[in-house]
Length: 374
Image 1 (cartoon, helix red, strand yellow):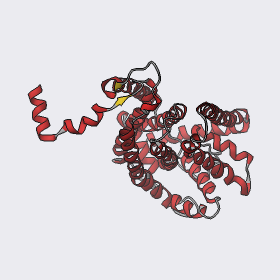
Image 2 (cartoon, rainbow, N blue to C red):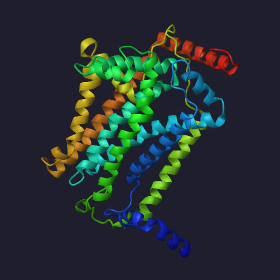
Image 3 (tube, rainbow, N blue to C red):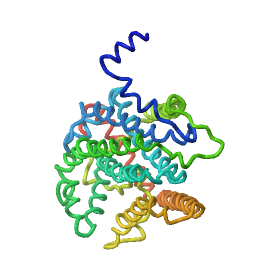
Image 4 (tube, rainbow, N blue to C red):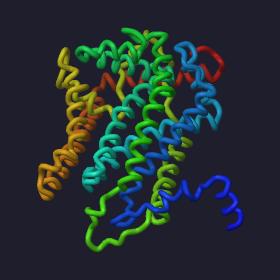
């Protein structure tokens, strides 16, 4: 085996390429908390692979998008791939939240790791855009209705709103160019931007590490990243992939009725956007952009400024503020999300309408399965 590895190294120089990984040392030793970043990266790879495979059959047109997705769903492998793609996206959002909380509480944003923090946070709006552009691609009534609402929200933003709206949906209203624009953004532009930002982010991580030697906790022993942390990463990744695979196989990604302007349907966003959906109720009309742009943008700017605000605080004050920020931020998000769902649960008219829409969706799937136009 050693001769084979030596021969391979003489041709590929793989040992030099792997040297940065082997040299990485964790000042406080390995931790299960550190696994979130690795899982996020691998789920991104899963998204890219499954997305490329789905592209081979998908047709980005208002006339054929739903039919092509239904065709994918007819084979167990296609339905499984689409399910993995769908649930891996949900997993990325959850892991991203866990990762931000971990970095914030451990103060891993401190010098010289400010760029790690900034580039990581800039991935958040990109992930949101990725989700917004991906959900309507099924050509379903729910997806098209969602992008229509989201397009109107973006269009209400002063000055730049109408321009961004046209870029997103291909005009002032959702039409034939909408799916083409969304498809280009989802599979063309967004992956390039995300990969470019990830290269900078990961490069900074390898340069400065996950934590500083100055932040070493008493009583801990430094350990190399390989194999101690790598083992933990693989254990957690295996569990996450098992959960995603089980959900994809047993439940699958949803497919509602095809888009139909004559259908009466009150669209609801995905669960991770429910807090913003609820917040809009408190800022209506011309003030809606405060809930959808100003408040989220302000929170993001505040998070980006954390490394610089931290320098002005004592260690005790910094720890207290960071803890309150995590508890308050998560509490506000959870409270608004729950309030949105609770409002729908208590709305009998909405529940009846949802049941009717569900029945229509099932009827459409039945007709499509019989080779008839739904």
